[in-house]
Length: 593
Image (cartoon, rainbow, N blue to C red; front, side):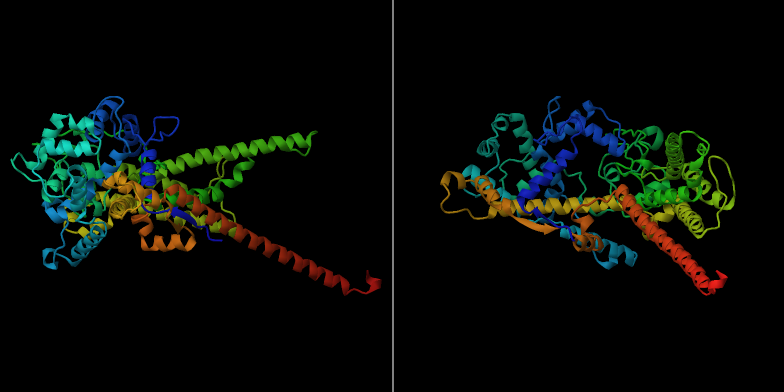
């Protein structure tokens, strides 16, 4: 039976998703804060656990909280409105650039075939343009928002000369009394919107410039880059500590489709501008190659195959030694107690086998699979570890109390021996692929962008899908919000409620809360997986734990099926043998019985 469910759509679902995003970032309390607030401790824990960035709560307050939350006191936080404002930064830039050209460097314009050296580059450019257009907000959204602001604050929509009095009227209309009395903030806003000029009208172009004045360094083109979030921010895959990779400029550095491979192959940050203010960001060790919570490794396929190989190798070579230490119960007085003791010994031995073998194989085999820069030495150690547990046991026969690689002749074990070595060869091939990737010179990759794209780690491709999904969802938030603001209200509504745009929007929001759509199910899921919309629009992240678990279920089902078929075959042969004996006996004469 197909499992489906109804999910809300429209503005109410957008609010729930913003609350969900805020809840995911809350880490410093025993319970979720229902107001959706995010404090400095939450951000510090997130940066450390996800990216290994070493930062203190004081540094978070003085940078992130002060810049996005409005202050740097200990009780300052980022609330839901500010979370939404952060998510809106790329969309505001895209809307402003599309119609008002406030920053040409942040615009992804469609180009002709003559602007590219190869056809692949041109096709990749068209791919990015197509994705960007699908996530482009309505360019008239800025015009409509300004229309509502002027109507709510001044009573008409005609452009007004922008001065401090007009700003005070606007803030007063929306109940922001503290901002009305903040002259320093008003002066800064005036400077950002007018560029220090007198007599500037608050029209669409001025409003667009005011909205984007302090976010110009955000590069919206990274939304379609196949890169990780860490790379988009720091333009490197390494720590930015000087003694390791040099100082990192925090300016917006452009990166082509080969940027990731360039950084990996070159082994250092190539985007340094010593003339700008810089701050080294230190990363701490997080065991990224085995971090199955944060999924911070290069290849998910490698992780799934590694665990599958571990299971097959254990069953093939180690399962039989669980009899180690068993007690012979034949001459014991207490048969029951002896069997209980044997059970405890057997399961303890299995636990020790799985713990020791699993730790050495999984940790050793994972070396070099980190998404962050890993030296070739670690990849070599991972390669050797896999070979020691899959290739060597297949070639060398060793019989000890702790492990036994002596081969058995039955078909089931032969099958497992070959599966183990085949999967081991696949794992070593992936490790060798990573090793070659790090060995290719930067110049060679720079001239072959198609090869550079092919060498991009799997996690970078997965995170790029999350960026596309974020752009899709925030664009949908804008559309839904615009709909409830533009919808006509009822004639029976009191004039004091519907006179303002936000009053009408609140009423329309209440009416739109009961809209749902059917989602989920087998065909719904697979259809979106094949088209890619499950990842680039729904934003689903399939963790390696989920993939490995499902893969294990499939393997177990296949083993159960194979075992059942084998048992049926053996029983059938035994039954046929008994039938033949019975037939021979019935042929005898009575006197021969």
